[in-house]
Length: 135
Image (tube, rainbow, N blue to C red; front, side, top):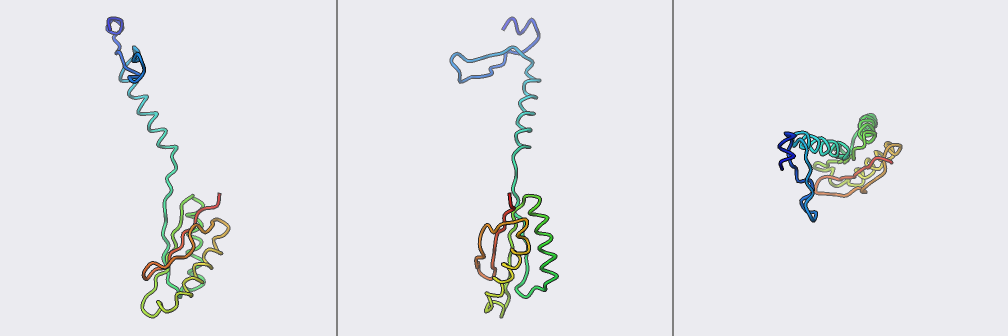
């Protein structure tokens, strides 16, 4: 303690769980700053995967589908997963197979950038499919 006081530094407990506890004489402010910097750097390295959603109807036109596929391919290139949703309204509920055809056509259009993560599933009035980026 006296050595730390004479050098105008702090006695910092580096490893309290060790037997005996390990202490160092250092500037506590610098130590705290270095720890925060390390923590911030490790958070930067973690990859966050976002899920982007694309909605459409079962009677979507060919060009509109191509535009949505182009947008989805941009998301997939960025490393995001894509949730493709086909919404059914009214009489469209009787033609679920048309929605499945649209989803498979969409998956085929984006096959260069993606793989099907989850096959089409019906959830209420929606049919959903997940696409994951190719590695």
